[in-house]
Every structure is written in C-alpha cells, then in structure tokens.
Image 1 (cartoon, rainbow, N blue to C red):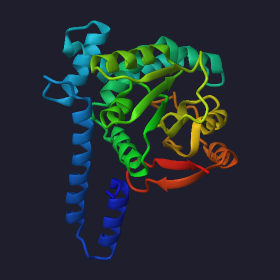
Image 2 (cartoon, helix red, strand yellow):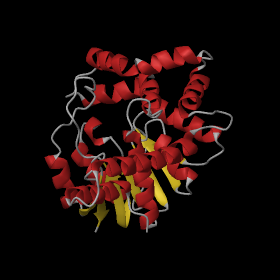
Image 3 (cartoon, rainbow, N blue to C red):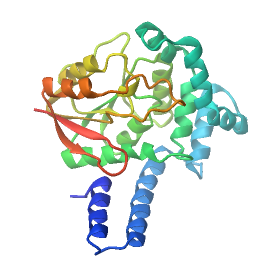
Length: 286
C-alpha cells in the first residue's frame, strides 16, 4: 500500500534525526514527493489543449464569467483575496449567521480567489486534496461528499480517479460554477444547495471538509450533520484548525476545541493525522 506523503516525509525526517539521511537528501525527496502530487493535481484539472495549469484555470474562469482577456482575468484573480477582505468588512458581522450566508451567496470574488489558489502559483496546500484522494484509495472509499465544495477542483480530482462525487455548499453561485465545470468535462456529479436541501443519511463512505470549518457559523452542528451522512465505518477528512491572518477575516472560527469535542460525541474517532505538511485529519465513524 502506497504510503501517504506526509507520513513518508515524517519518517524520512526521523532518518535525518538518526543521521542515516542528510538534510539535502531529505529535501530532494520532499521536492520529488510534492512534484508527484502536483502532477496528479495538474493532470486532473488541466483541460485538453492547454499546456499549463494556470493558463487552463484562467481560461476556464474567463469562459465562465464572459471575459476573453485572460490578462484581466489574472489581474482580478491575483487581487481577489484583498477584494474579498474588503467585501467582508463592508457587508458582514461575523456574529450574524444570515449575513455570513448572504456573503457567500452574493459574491463572485470567491470564484477568482479559489481558482487562483488552485493554480498553485503561491501556495501548494491545495495538494492536500491529493492526500485525501490517496487516503480514499487506501480505504476503498467510493462514495464521497465534498462539503463546502467551493469551485469544485477537489471534487474533479476525485472524480477523475473514479470516485462518485456529491458537492454541497451554501453558495448557489459556487455550485452553479461547479456544475458548469463538471459539464465542461463531460463528468457527472450530484449537487446539494445546503440552503434548500438536507444531506442524505448514511450515504457516504468519505466526506471531505477541506479548509471549511473555519468558515462555519456553527461548526458543532455541522459535525452532527456530517456524522449522520456518513456510513458506519466512513471517514470525515478535513482540516480542523487555522492560522490567524488579517488577510482572511472570513475565518470566523479560531478555537476548534468544541468542534473536536463534538467529533467524539458524534462517534467520530481520529484515524489519521497529517503531522508534516498541511495538518489535515481523518475521523472514522465508529
């Protein structure tokens, strides 16, 4: 069974500590492993006829929003995080659940922000989705829910590797974009607008919550909903912690103690943790 990259890198660093591997050799192995993950990500998302991931994703975004000038699309994407911060401060009080939900349902800035993030131009953390894919393959997971699916890149990745996908979000604009992206690729998936429909009961053997919980008004309630949607023995895979940053005021949850306590109360036991790269964890429904 293929070793997950965070586990492999942790093991190799232990070899550095034991002086049976040099730091230079470790760095080469880390670059090699991240490069392999990057290729999986790129090959899954890049459209035919486009040589690079960045150009492909910008073309895709431009086609959707009706802008043929990819230089302009790139400009919007590069400034999307700053624009999103300003929009948030102008529109949202973090203690107002309705305002939080309206924000995600009324802005297209998130499209630009997430698609630029997924180009890997400035951050490789989207590659945690590849870890999730490898974990799913190890565990034989075939039915997956992407909770807080965003622009759907992670779901496309898993679907490319024969995992049946359901995408759920509170943002209707994001779900519409996800559906458009799947249709563009001739791939099928289910889409759930969480404002209108509940999640099905015991339907999934894997639920992804990738960089989602820090955005939730009520993460404890979300744990209960996701546990109910997991089949017995299924896994919840996500990141349940966040760095404080002024650039992303949308991160309204900073203390995850109650969330992790809710895991235990809802029968979810920690089964795996990335202790090296991005800090994601998997919890199993017992």
